[in-house]
Image (cartoon, rainbow, N blue to C red):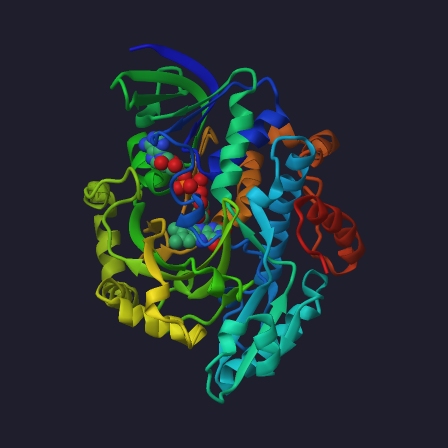
Length: 498
Ligand SMILES: Cc1cc2nc3c(=O)[nH]c(=O)nc-3n(C[C@H](O)[C@H](O)[C@H](O)COP(=O)(O)OP(=O)(O)OC[C@H]3O[C@@H](n4cnc5c(N)ncnc54)[C@H](O)[C@@H]3O)c2cc1C
């Protein structure tokens, strides 16, 4: 079996590996980097345009980041501010990539789409007003508007108010939101990476094994789909950016840090409308409150999507049963194969201790199109079934850990797991995911390649790539600095600032 070596091996061609590859190569042009992707095309899983909602999560419209009104009538908006700052790192990186010729034609991967939050009932109206008061006070959200006037909401998003009875409603809107095609970004980044000295991007290669070799470095074994040939690559650093496939690979790697780790797949579906007469009348991403027992990542939203230059409407997500960890290249045995003696009890306890989630999955798995239309009518009362089709979304494999205590916890957030010697980093979970990929990958680089970012020189090197790197833009006295950096970056990407 031929064996060669690379300084860095990236497993997977989604937004995370693509971002990791470009950041590392730009920080240290001498690095040799190999990317393996099981599919014959790049970035076909969670990062692909239709497999996620394409929301540039910046904390603007997602009510799940600011879930409650406190007893004193305020809403804590700290998490929304943090997410905005994390998304800003992505905006800055993408904009710099455009200037440096790594990304081209921004409308192919990002478009301005206002972000709207929409609520009903007196209680939710009071909550949204308190949230708005907290948000608009911060310079990130100063252009946010709030209204309880149904006519005004109709101007912002006409489909929300047509044929709606007389009920309490409220909405906020900010024009600075975006719709992002993360798959398109990943493919462009990898296109650039594959052309650099010492770098290879290899679609059609499934990583089948990885572990320590005798020198203490890693070996990564891959099988080429077309020939069945196995190759092995030795490396000092592995990034497991395999999305849903990461847990199975971590188990193969035998990392003590992954002991007890399990995965719980949640399939997804969208309703999509392509009728131009309807699509043209909605230009926003509208997020509501979680319905019933739905977990936060299943909060419904009605979104403008722009993929390959075509505008559509997307509504969902709806959850679906699956035992596969990947949509295209997953296998029905993924979930059973991931159950090991070290995570069995954790998985059982999760099932037992998260009855709401189990009930939600059962309800979602058995619903009809008519049931889905009822949910859509809460946003768009006039919607008609004939205008909508159901398509598959990506699969989220939620990480399950026993270190969270006896009951075990399903993690709905994104997590980076790093080996004790920092020679392996793996990404688990999904949300807010792709939007904050630059922030997430930067943290992984800080841990595993600290020498590249050390001192003033390291910060200056990174600021050539991410101009706001290591800046606190959320501090109350950073409003001017934020505007000076955020405005030109948005101009490059064709996004709104005010
Ligand atoms: C329904 C849904 C909606 C979402 N909505 C949003 C949103 O609106 N905004 C947002 O920011 N985020 C959203 N996300 C999250 C976002 O999609 C993910 O966080 C992000 O795409 C993860 O990127 P990744 O590179 O880690 O994984 P992926 O894009 O899944 O890439 C992993 C790659 O690894 C490959 N792979 C796996 N195993 C192997 C192997 N053994 N060998 C070789 N290759 C392998 C896979 O084929 C795949 O191409 C959503 C996710 C879902 C599922």
